[in-house]
Image (tube, rainbow, N blue to C red; front, side, top):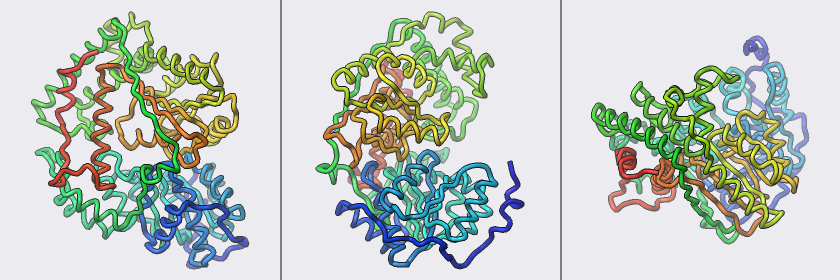
Length: 541
């Protein structure tokens, strides 16, 4: 760790920008008409939420917009703030569509970053590409760098109020500010408010007024009902350019979706029912103590007391068991400190191990089903390519091992370096012999995989936005396929079916606010906060 002030103290405020580089004219691509209209609105509005659904070319049209403004001498340089996993993708897209553009991708330790910031300040680049963590860590210098524009890509990283990256972004101004996202709301209406605080804080007013107008809360302050959604949709629409895949369906690959239900083996079902019994007891205890409460914060790690932590641990164990019983054993071993790394592991998984409940778990029904599915797809055509998502990185490791006899695969997770992830993407997109792309949800943001025509979700995320991000990796304007197929593997009667229902409900909230569809006559959407308890009582594997 290097002291920011000592290394960067000589890079201060500057009121003017003098470029040492000649910037040639300009954007070399061709936009679809709907993209060109978006560019015109971005330029006219200056501050805008660009909410194109994933795969519709937000990156390309943003490069076109910036290049147009540079040509018109309205801007000279600015920031692209995006997740680290897609920084190099941004660089490639800029060079593809603006070959003469000067780009600095900020990487490395502080001394190297300091040199990159210095070069940018001196006018060596029109584009400075950073990730949100760098914005926070290098705030003292980044906040003072000249910028005529800021692009916050995949801006859902600023959807919550408390994280420093969200707070810092809202203090970072520029004449032109564009937030890019395919999913402005992943779970809750409050996310749109947080994002619009940076785009244009006047749109939704102060938070107290927003809260009273659009949210009905329970006794404990948790959202119970969203209301007046037509009004919220109208307010957002005035400051948002939106296109859905349905609106340009003739230019997109056709999409087939299928859920494959899998029966759990008898020994696995016994352990599943044991976990459900423990979980039901904890849920009922919480309902009696706390009343009906929102599960949303619980799923996202918020406000967890001891009781809520017990509920969450059992939910995760159910999900691990549905994927592969070995995941429970690995988690228990981590808890005992028997495996390398700094993972804590699950205390509840260790309880199951200590009670001998994991000893007879020898079957792997979901992995067996997945191997059968992958084999059928690859045998059908040597051109087929498959993206496989799992929440659990250990599951991806097992899939990689189990498919070595079928084809080559690449791994794309948070454990892989930024350069390693970029290399994995390039290998998958260019090597005919690499037909499997194994990804955690670290790969669910902004990644373009046009060579794939099948996507398999081995399990489900809790976030509707994360699920949509997964699917959009292959549903893209750039797809080389006329049709793509989305598959979801779910254990019949399990928590996974509950998850899918929850994702659909969250999607309804997002559609109502962003697209103005699915709204009841009173503009309300209720979330059934007791649904988990009811599901556990009514379903079994």
